[in-house]
Image (cartoon, rainbow, N blue to C red; front, top):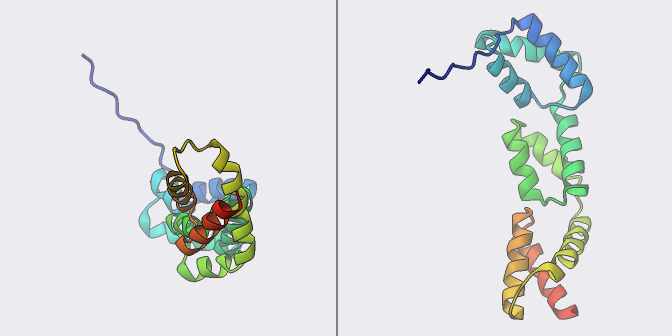
Length: 164
């Protein structure tokens, strides 16, 4: 049996990485963590990655606060995510804690509850449950998996169960 060939990734110089990241960032928002991961994958020397990143930030191709604001807006409005899940996603992208807190301040508690309520109302008829207790626990589990806070989830699910 022939040995499996190792996948060779083309290494890029810092100048090539800068040009490639400029193209990528002009198409879609990227975080500084995304840029660091890409440069590491491309084999850009560690000592030169921060210099490339500094140039991208200076030229406003990368702005973590702008990225975080867009991420929060998209994930809460279109993805139906709660604050816990959004926070975890931003941390994974390498965004600083202060910037995450600032971006999450956009989400209002009333808007979050209303969004959760509409998700619960859409989900509940599809849930197979033998009794109210099972339905309630499945709805709570669903809402928690979407990243909403436990107190909010409990209040919204209990209100739904009373109204139905």
